[in-house]
Amino acid sequence: MSPTFDRFVSPLRPFQDSAQHQYRCHTVPDEEWVRAGLERVVGDHRSGCAFVQSRVLRGLMEISKSHYFESCKSPRRYKHLKSISEQFLLHHSQKALKDHALFEGQARINEMIKDFHLYAGDGHFHSASSHDPRDDKQVKNAIGHLYALNLRTQHLSHLALGSDGTCKKPHDMKVLKKLDIATLRQGATKGQKVLYIWDRAGIDFTRWHRWKFHSAIYFLSRVKKNMKLEHAIAEPFDREDPLNAGVIADETVGHSCGTRIRRVRFRVPETGEIMEFLTNLGPGIAPGLVAQLYFMRWRIEKSFDEIKNKLYETKAWAMSANAKKMQAAFIVLAYNLAQLLHQDADDKQGDDEPKSSPPSRGSESKQEQRLQSLREEVLKRGGQLPLLREIYRRPSQLGVKFYRWLRSHLYDPSPWSLAQQRLTLVCAKF
Image (cartoon, rainbow, N blue to C red; front, top):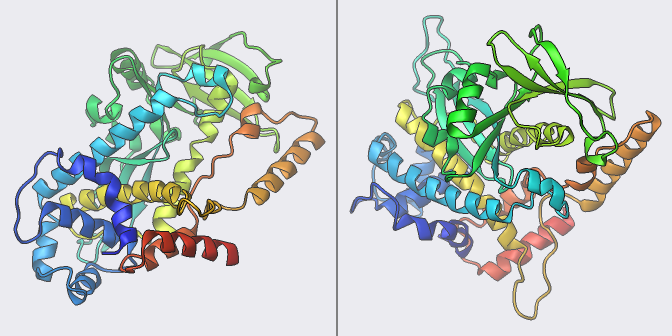
């Protein structure tokens, strides 16, 4: 493999030695297995056969095609990979929570959420594998997974295989309720809280109540159509605070489950649309922050776009449920390592060399132009742009040029410093 690919996988090394379910396999050692899986995600291999053939031709794999596909079913290998991924995610999530500066320069706002691990959650589907069976209507059902995006680290985690193709799409909450608390808390320690920001498929008020008071797990979602919410009691909030710009009301409302829930009504400044958010967060989280956190949920959709259109992961690798979970584990690990390598690529190339420009997350000038257009649109409507819409500008996904560069350097023997220079050059010219 190339120095660039070595750099790509290097953040895993501290966790591989301590990962569980290790085994000394002389045919394909665990470390080589992990590297091969990451290579399959990053490389442009449209089938498992193409991937195996590519590795064989490069002298990187000596096992047969059947041996490789059988190894994808290995529960032991999946558990080992999952252990590495969980340690990696836990390390970075705890580090980010300690820093807890989600909104740069906003100490008061960061204080409100300092104890929260913040996750945008959703389901994502891709097509069945070539050999997956058809149902009684001769249709292959899509393969569904539940993922969560850590809004502090921008790292993805795989929560569950929701549908293995043997049935139609299950409801997200039905899958969530089957997960154990340790999975939902994702390594959060005592005194730390977990917030999931989900679309309407994540609503279950009875379960929300139980998770909050027994496990410090909170949810934020939107009101469903035809949902009956009654006996609204208005709660006071600071209407002069720029953080709460656009907030119409902060209320507690009753519902058929017998408990009360918090509802924040918000007017979108650029369109005038009124949106209603539901949450079991307490009053210590300002209503304007509740609205902003929900709007940040769309970032997981951008992550899915990155997986589909830049990593080309649109189809299941194999038939077994274990292989489908293994694929998801490799996808999130490759996605997360790409985030770290992107940061690494912007470091100094040498003691006497200037720092390269940010290589692939889009032009800052274009971002400022979009923000200025938004300000003008809001001003025409006589509104005020919420504070956090102004200051939160963290790009939502890596650019396609970055992935093209990474893919082209999978087997390139060029040193890392030269690879950095090439990335800067590509981003400057295209």
